[in-house]
Image (cartoon, rainbow, N blue to C red):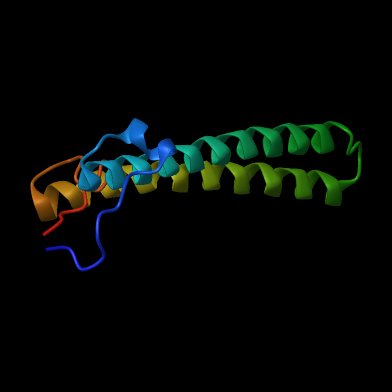
Length: 110
C-alpha cells in the first residue's frame, strides 16, 4: 500500500509513458539530449565569434592569440561533450553489460 496515495501523471509527462520508471528515464534522456544540443549551438556561436575576432585582429598579435585560444577552447569543449557520451557508454558496458545503461536510464521502482 502506498502511504502517499494515488499519484496521477501530469499532462506533460504522459508523452513519456505510463510506467514511472521508464518515464523518468526518458525525461532524463530528453534533458541530456537538450543539453548537448545547447552545447552544440553555443559552440557554433562561439566559433563564429572567434573567427570574426580572428579576421578582424589585423596585425595585433594579442588579438590573434586570443582568437586562437577561443577556437581551441571551443574545440576542447566539444570534445569533452562528445567524450562524455563515449565514456558513459564504456562505463555502462563495463559495469552493467549494457552500452546504453547510462545513456537511456530506467529507474528501478520497488
